[in-house]
Length: 426
Length: 81
Ligand SMILES: Cc1cc2nc3c(=O)[nH]c(=O)nc-3n(C[C@H](O)[C@H](O)[C@H](O)COP(=O)(O)OP(=O)(O)OC[C@H]3O[C@@H](n4cnc5c(N)ncnc54)[C@H](O)[C@@H]3O)c2cc1C
Ligand code: FES
Image 1: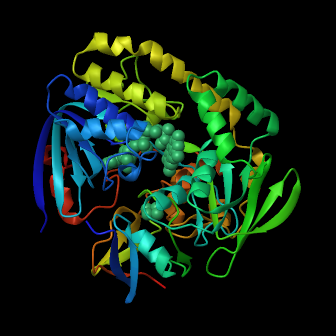
Image 2: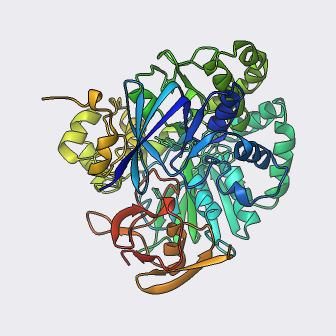
């Protein structure tokens, strides 16, 4: 049987992406004990996945080196699945871990939104960030034909990365309109550092078609993807490809903050100027408070780390910097709203829930997420609705109800890491 | 540390770069990861531990998310085809 490990930190940080790393380092400045917990095999989060292998002196290398040299205890490969009464329960490959803390910083990041269309369950149809994550984890895409589709600036980053890795990027399908895309470009030029980034992408993506008002309508293939049909300014056409990298921007991972009792506002964790949530002593930084990119995640993390160790003046010092990057949240929101046509891509037999294979037509029989779940098992599989619930919210306008413990499927023996005083008694 | 690592996917030897995940080895072998409840072949979607589409058996232990596990020498990976 698994053993239960007990850990105690003055400050526990969940999520070792940029926000969590910055928070942990700021908190560690005070000399307090800091634990940084992440479910991946290495620190870095989404953007710095696999950054251990990249050139020195890059932004990621500098932060990761600071982390390596610090006294922060990195708890890798551990997934927090329960939170109650000031304690967390996590599971790793070989043990269950009970973590108690003085202060808690939640930096759980974001995931991609996936929308169902015929053929989206075929092997080699992946998320945009999903394909990138696999390539960063060692997948060789040299010579492969890739269509990148969906919405948001991540598509550009993924296309540039795929090309650098030797893939042939056939085209980028962006569902937003050309005027919106143009306005996005202009506004981002005014954000510090972003003009250089835009020029860099323009150079890296030269020659790759970038279609606006364009989205995938169906994917085809016998047991794996062979081609994708796209709609482009009202015309459909078919493109042969090896991979379709498709994501409709990012959605915040608010499940753990919700379980901790943090209030949400418009779908994001509500925080005060010190990044403190509605729960005293619990802070939140990075994407769960608003999709705003790397720089915002870093500065929010630093503010949370200082605030959690009673270093308010250091935190305050960073408020103007945060304000400069908060504009990105508004710019992104204005640029990439999902167009209504995307609600009509799924056909009656298109699966919406991939874990339990529940089709669109079966969901149409119900009027709420709760009823659909009860009768069809939609959202009841191992991903616990992380993929289908946000899609159902967009397709049907359903309110997604609260999360239930455990946050992830865990081994029975790991339940022993849940503090006994928070286990419901009969 | 060696540059590459060899594992077996459905008995077939596959070599990937050191630090690669099991999902990468499965894709490199040409296999797909799991079979859905209605019998469809599935492979990774999110690459980050969220979707559970990449589940395979690793050294006899079923239902592991292959995108979250690093390849180790001589791992026996069973994928669904
Ligand atoms: C798939 C994907 C790819 C991206 N690629 C790029 C890119 O190429 N370029 C770019 O500029 N931006 C990219 N972004 C956006 C980028 O992630 C953000 O701009 C920013 O860096 C987010 O930082 P963060 O620290 O808030 O979150 P993340 O980097 O998402 O870090 C959150 C971390 O918390 C961990 N975590 C969450 N819940 C738990 C739990 N319960 N237990 C344990 N650990 C947990 C996650 O595994 C993750 O490692 C990407 C986003 C996604 C989702
Ligand atoms: S690919 Fe989504 S969990 Fe592994």
